[in-house]
Length: 215
Length: 215
Image (cartoon, rainbow over all chains, first blue to last red; front, top):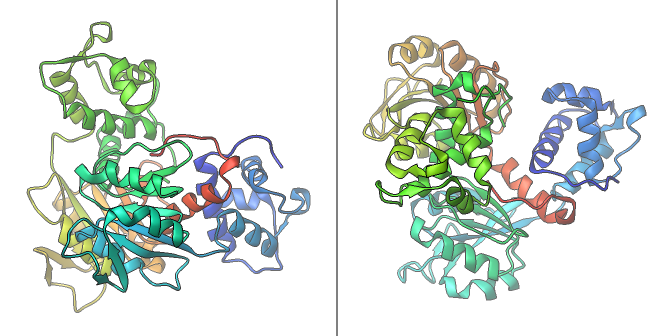
């Protein structure tokens, strides 16, 4: 196993490798070059990406699809179920609740928090809503590791702080405000506007950018 | 102006710099170090990021907030309005239409496409729905540069191909399928599941990752 550390891009590629492998038969063998070709990367990169997370076979002989799939799934944490805590039951929060509340899904919202007294104690899409001050107790008790912030911008940082105090390890921030979290918490800002701005920045300045594949 | 090329991360930081500057008064001056501190990066990185996109003042004297804001806005394409074409008027497509169809917004969905004959010719949130074969004609005529794919996975690549043929320059792919586009088209995959997998990958393998700030 490599002593070097993985980057976020390695995790993204891992997820893409798996998607590709899902369409292949279990007994087949696949070389790192074949896997690389699909993503437009190199065989060396594939071998390195895999080496961060374990030993998946002998690269020189090609990987066995079934074993590789299993190893990557495990590295991605897909061998378990991930309950999620949602903070902010507004418009977007409800969209997420209506789409991500199925208990059988690998990722599902299990509990919601909102300061609005009219929402507290109610159930949305089968998910119970509590006051944010109950976060640490409920999140720890229900062993939740992922939080989603759909609170208004001005409440985003406070929501993040409460999630961190509650022991959350990964945060999706859907609010338009940036939040700061300790480096041991993984933060993803899912800010639509800033993603749109990246695209328009490319369109306006296309000759100033490296050409690269999208992610 | 730098001869070097910008990366996507430079564009993301640009968008974050702007957000920070919006909270400051126009007449103030700000140094690259101050701007850097907010993002946890270095002054040199800020100066380099800015240099890709133009001349925004004299770094040694500090930048004038108003001028810097204006320059960054322009580099991000925020001095104009961006109509968007949406492909796939299903559940998610409707959520986007209901939230992004306001003509006054800088980013707004201006036209929709769907193969379902019951939807063609109808209007959703004020947006007219057409058959995908009309894409090239309508998108060119309406001078649309951004496309969003909310079609089912099996129709994702065809939707992308049609958008590319229509002259679209940036694509948001919300479908769960990966799509391939020419390198001159900027592609953003907004695939929720794969973003969740990146977070769980971190949680499962935390000691195997570089610690880094989220984006």
